[in-house]
Amino acid sequence: MTTETMDLASIQSTKVIDARASACPGPLLEAKKGIGAVKVGEVLEIWSGSKDTRNNLARWCKKTGNEFLGFIDEGAYDRLFILRKK
Image (cartoon, rainbow, N blue to C red):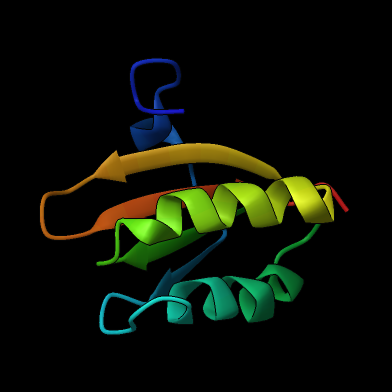
């Protein structure tokens, strides 16, 4: 999913994790730790410099029952959004 299908820029994230300095799977591990800091129905935002994080987070969300809302490509990094469902 990309910004064409949803206005991700208007999402109010509850928590933002800056994992831009982490190589994969670092951003995924940060997301796993960070999801517990947001309540069900809230959004966790991950900043990652690795394009692999897009697919890794989407697969992880599907596996865990959370919702990968998509990403915004900021050029040097991505802003990725997860809606906590469980």
